[in-house]
Amino acid sequence: MSPGPNSYYGPLDPAPDAGWSDAPPRMGFFTDTSVCIGCKACEVACKEWNDVPGSGLDLLGMSYDNTGALTANSWRHVAFVEQARPAGHRTPPFAGNPTGGSVSASSAAVAAGSGNPTGTDPGVPPGSPDAAARMAAGPSSDATPTAAGTQFLGMPGDGPPGRTGSAEGRTDFRWLMMSDVCKHCTHAACLDVCPTGSLFRTEFGTVVVQEDICNGCGYCISACPYGVIDQRKGDGRAWKCTLCYDRIGVGKTPACAQACPTESIQYGPLEELRERAAARMATLHDRGVPEARLYGHDPTDGVGGDGAFFLLLDDPEVYGLPPDPVVTTRDLPKMWKRAGLAALAMAAAAVAAFVGGSS
Image 1 (cartoon, rainbow, N blue to C red):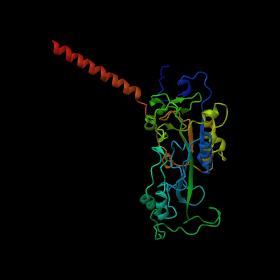
Image 2: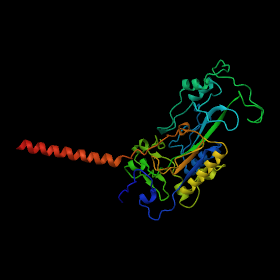
Image 3: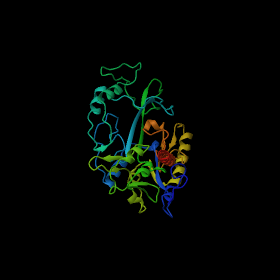
Image 4: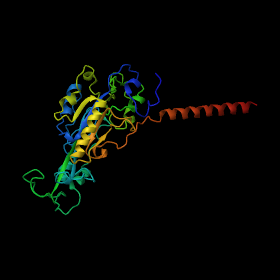
């Protein structure tokens, strides 16, 4: 089947483009981070159903985030972001560094140096005790620093913010939590560069790795604009979320969405999820949360829209997401065309030189 005009870039229904006839509606995830409570039920359910090896039992010195990133052994990653911001309701989002101070500089240094190898590549980079200690010291302010470099912010109130009188002068922080996962891009560069066909497009528009024919070349790792795919060092093969292909094929909900107690992770037809996400964002805006935004929902973006998209409460970079991802194989047709023209020009020059030399 010859590639269509939008096979590498632009709006596209990926399953028919991949050769599926009579494909069902494209399925996907909508993750509403505004109701994520960080329980990690999705991480546990994913590991249990897919028999993913244990990981995330280390102290990373990064709040309660114990898995650190998506890896070959963590197909779901619940990110915890602490943001220092004034206490009170409907305050503007914090515009600076999203990481606040920890309990003490010494405890942060110990935590950063206690991580164990994940057994995957690239995996989770080891923490830096010195950097963690500097972060734990906190930003400069008028508060009295302790001997360890942290700041005393006063005793906590005996009630929730907004019910204890004025919030002026009181400092607080908020959690931003997000269950990250493979985006199942419309234009999946990992699929484009796979030399063995290990990665394939399903009839539901998702992207799945067939580990039994993966040769461990690693091309997909560098091709992914989100840094999702990872290898296990034990066998060298690539692993990632399959959107529970074995479950959705028989009409079941993926394990992570099934286990989510707040319905932060929602599964269903992608077009329906996009409508639901737009309505949810409008509701949050009406309730005084103007920073709410959608990420990965736009079919005209650099990857043609994601099969797993998000509602965020801050900039994508705060959550460790690229602000403007672009499929890395977008310019492949132009590159091959130029390479072919260059080869023809070299061949013509060689023929001309040979003919000219013989005469």
